[in-house]
Image (tube, rainbow over all chains, first blue to last red):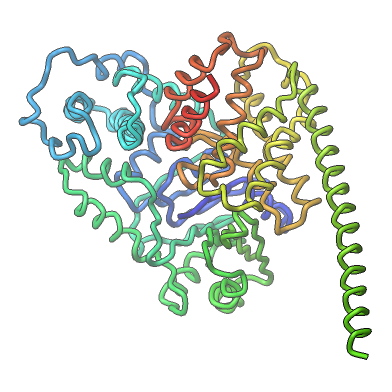
Length: 313
Length: 222
């Protein structure tokens, strides 16, 4: 699990580096769009690579500046109240009944998926789909904890539509790419940021990620959905004692003035991180950067939970 | 010879016990003094924020009650951190413009952004004083995060938000609901109204598990 803290990263960079007047950032692998909220208020440029397609849609709809914002008329047209009951047997997502969703919720998911097919403009369609993701997330959690949903499906859809509008009030310029690990290229940038994912780590902590991925693909097999997602992220795994990614780091930092590695540690002592993560990275980037600095903050010291940033400049 | 040895040993032990007792009393007095001082500072923050009551004290009481029903209950260290963080959770407000805090209207645009940095200001200043090993600044940093990932400053989602911050978020909201606030039209007068609001925000603003715990505590109060 990674707890990415954009403002802390900014502070760390500003404490150590004289910032250029027009900073630009490169994130070679990111999969949670909310991580960018803070940075989106800065007058900076961002190149974000999102290898998971279902999440890239969300990134694009929330951050990509060229994307039009769906007006309320579009929303009304595609977010109607379902009055007639729909036969659950004809619902392609019926396997999720009473596991993740109620009958009514599944009817809406089927309707929204079909409705999205009628939206011609791809950008508008992506926006529509990303709001459905939020609604699914809300339903999955409430059903898990046995809460009655206080809002009707169309109301919760409208609620997230408004949230979406708030989120889009940003100053930054984003460009979103969907390169795989092997095809991604280094960028001329002020900062390159690596969010470290560890092997065997539960890097995605909620089911909505997999359910949404499957829903988008039109199937219900979550094992398959997980497999597709993990295949995309697996090459980025950091393994202690394994240097397989080091050439990737070296390549990605070629054109970057500084590099940051961010990770959330659990149960491993600071000294072990220093020995098996910090030192090897310092060795490999020794020729690229003159300085490095490790900063950390305690989250729950009794359980050895710390967040880290390793900055090279 | 042997008897006098034991007598001396007993005397030494008695003297050490006495010294320990006096030292412990001194420490307890010093700790209490520090606690009182922190409560006094928290009370000043409450007034700056425009609360007509001891908001921080109420938040602390609610937070500790919730925490006692979670996995944190057995860790006195974590409970102490939560207590301190609850008392000082809004200390960053002292560094935010007064006009923003006392605004009678909903804030928009840059004003919202400026308001949001109060958690970061608090974290930064406390971090400098408390050192790198203390978790209290982090707890404060995330007390405005939301379970659905639309909070601030880091838009963390679900269990990415540390448990103490999730508890503090609920406690802070309950205390705020019970207060007269300039920017809010609706006032929550009864526990029943608060429970309805908590249920509606489960999975959105708050951790659903903690909402269940809080509801059972509020129902017992009635």
